Image (spheres, rainbow, N blue to C red):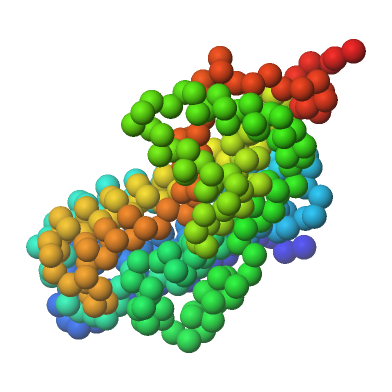
Length: 331
């Protein structure tokens, strides 16, 4: 077997030779364009890695009999936590970008048109694979308009394939509790109702929508799945529920880091170009603000915290459920 060389293994000649500043090509060298290119290339490499992790998680979640305490679920949580760590790096890269001043950017900005981060098909694919619906997108009428045909086809395929949140819904629906304990749900509903102040009584209407009727058509967690997710949050101290809780919590962290990245990106754009239109023709900061407000993929999990009760008010679980959860050995 031939020896592997570091440079060949990483294909460094291709990677390090892939920075071709437009300003140099046009004979008007702009020093900060090299930084601009490398940061965005790094973003795309990290998007590729996050997509790789998410696709592997989806493949595991598609299994019809994923055990709640299995090595496969541990792998799901581990890989999603890796995604969270990568997303934190993406947020931190903005600190480097912000060493470029508005005047530094103006030296080469007009040479980039109509190229734009809006054309990042990998990021749009990642959003779709996580579960962002087309009807939930900000600017849906033009979000694919600047992409090449083959890129549009990749995103459409991502949207039409089972997404992570859809598979999460299926997995939660298979959970036997609290579905097999109607008395628990009735008791919990009564306890929750008694905990509300007069200003919070509207939560009862929301509770009916989330856990019974299903609410609007854009909801991706069914009432059955929502009840299971709430149960996991409430009783996460039980051994069998610790990994499922980590899964739900990690998905919330994914959303939080994506939102943080969008927020930092929006502020950076406003700082560097102000109210100008983006190089790709978008509304710049206004578009990013709209995406920040609408693109919360796992918001339905986050909203469940509105229906939590303090531990001292939680209904006692029945003997069979406690045995299933493995809290203690009941004889």
